[in-house]
Image (cartoon, rainbow, N blue to C red; front, side, top):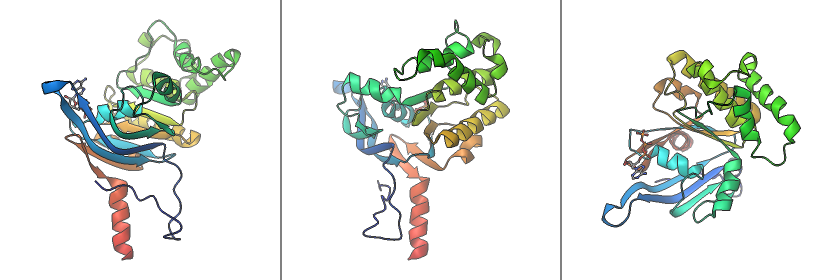
Length: 257
Ligand SMILES: Nc1ncnc2c1ncn2[C@@H]1O[C@H](COP(=O)(O)OP(=O)(O)OP(=O)(O)O)[C@@H](O)[C@H]1O
């Protein structure tokens, strides 16, 4: 598997230096089960994702997308190779290090995972409560502002059951972005939505991410939203089978040669 060209200004003065990657994966393997039941789910993954990029991960069912996403999110231990997220090595990381990394990541899942007993504002506020540096007295207003930004300023006191699917997913986006994380990980965020709501939700994510300068890694089967990506990576049978940025850079090198 080819690795992203890091661009070295000394060897090639025309190529700019790339910033430090938000996610840097090298020779990553992952296995489920033990003994005879041990099964490899990820094979020698190499991938670098840079600040501000919106990267969509596609691939058939069972190809390893969720496994890779949950590992990048510090939700599953990394076993073999190297997986650095926001400068922290997650292979061999302690629970405490994983918790620290998770604080800087926003998560959006297919099921919005809102707490039924809390209002939209309280659900968003929960994400702020993980941050010791944000004054508690500012939290309700910050949550309300974020709900305003996702177009739900008039629904802040509603409970999840009184919101539509698209509105609930917007609350989940507000919750993921309210603390201005450097990285947002999304697993099938449009799967439960109709075409129009799905489109609205990803355009909103794209807009807010560009505004806040955060990086998004999103798994989707939804071909209708691929155009929001800066880059598409494709998984097959546990391998990273293609990366549109590498294809582009190969084409550019061929054009220059
Ligand atoms: N907890 C687990 N225990 C054992 N095997 C697992 C576990 N989770 C995933 N797998 C296996 O790892 C492989 C990759 O699964 P994964 O869920 O990452 O794929 P996916 O591309 O996200 O699929 P989908 O699009 O259906 O969500 C599959 O063969 C799956 O059966």
